[in-house]
Image 1 (cartoon, rainbow, N blue to C red):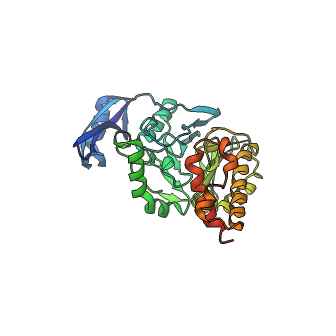
Image 2 (tube, rainbow, N blue to C red):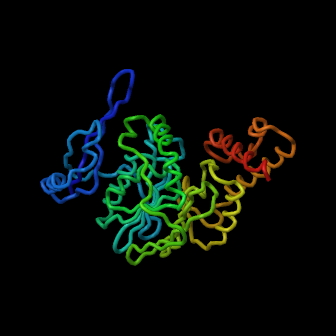
Image 3 (cartoon, rainbow, N blue to C red):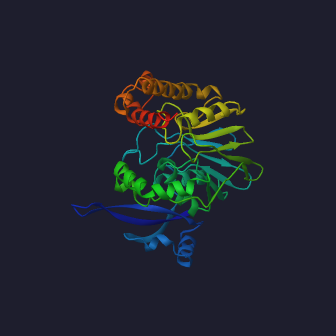
Length: 349
């Protein structure tokens, strides 16, 4: 099988005038022969050709993916992102990604932290199946889960998210792009841009992949205001996105009390296993939520005590959640942010 690639170059150093280039995969032109692939490009030139810094499109044999996916139950494939901040070494591969194969099509859940990661997801899928990629479900708004979305949309996926996701991404797109360019670097981030969902799931919704149903459920504000879960009905596997963290310190960007309340509800959902947004990538349920529940409850307890003691925000953030410091990775990066968000929320109780 041959796929189309476009050489895209961007300025990598404003002071030096140096450029960075990479060959960007362009789904939608796959063919059995190079000639057929090139003919498809000529018949319908990709919109990326008009991008500044774009070179010629060429066709090459389908390469192997750099991402490892494990089949945890028949038809459910998971990739574990590294527990780290996005950087040039990991290229934004810091969150878990899943794809589920039905008889008729394939759905992907989350897309990684750069277009390049999205391309690797596409290649990993094509190593296993030639079925159409019909859906991409974004579990929430954060950039490490959404920047690979465009390449999967180009591959034919309809992008679906929480009803609040379009506005959340529109408001944050520019900041996300600036921050991830800085963290990952221009070479790894070339071609990445935020794309909003094609539609939203306003309530419980079932996607039929052909003999395999996925239940999408938008959730109330918790980790973020855009959380959406996916249940693979056939295997009773619940994909929670960043409503559940493992190893990686939880990140609060919604409501602490809302998150605690939602986890209480979710624990009563009889899943056989769950997939967190970070760590894992598979945990038992509800036991897999014990560590996160302890952390969130400590955050709430410490925050209320700090407020009752009259501590200022600056004083409180140095104390809140400290009992959990040895239990989580990236604690010193995320806990101060969580403490600030918790204090700001709970001081008005």
